[in-house]
Length: 144
Image 1 (cartoon, helix red, strand yellow):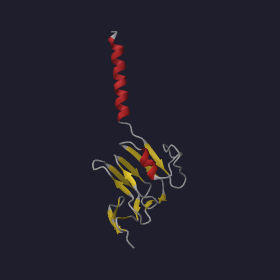
Image 2 (tube, one colour):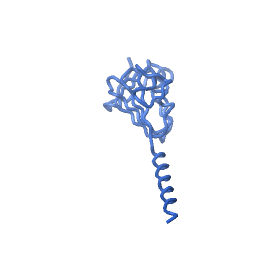
Image 3 (cartoon, rainbow, N blue to C red):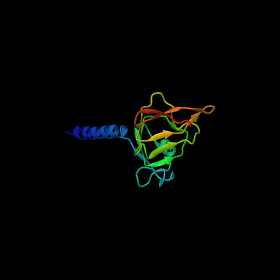
Image 4 (cartoon, rainbow, N blue to C red):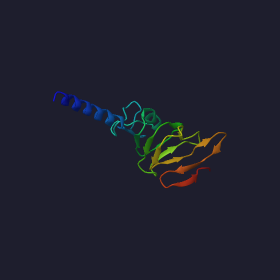
């Protein structure tokens, strides 16, 4: 019987470590009311920019993005993540015809992007790219 408590402690410890290893965090972004000095872990204390939230993530995390137009470029994704907008008509990443909007740098990353619009990006010597409208699964050419 004296070994039973040790077995129980070891089992509980292993379960706790396994649960922690698979835990993920949900980060919040609000382009209107957020602040990149916030902790970004609740809708009451969101980041201001998607770029800042991407700097905080670990593999398997989720970023919830509130309705706004986000004038951002250079959002690099290096790991598994979900970017969840509020609605493709109101959650918009707009590049103002500069650089790239979202760039996935890891070939092994599993990335989910939904309920948002990504528009107005160019690359290289002013070439326009067709961007994927992740909500409706239709390609759009944003050249004018």
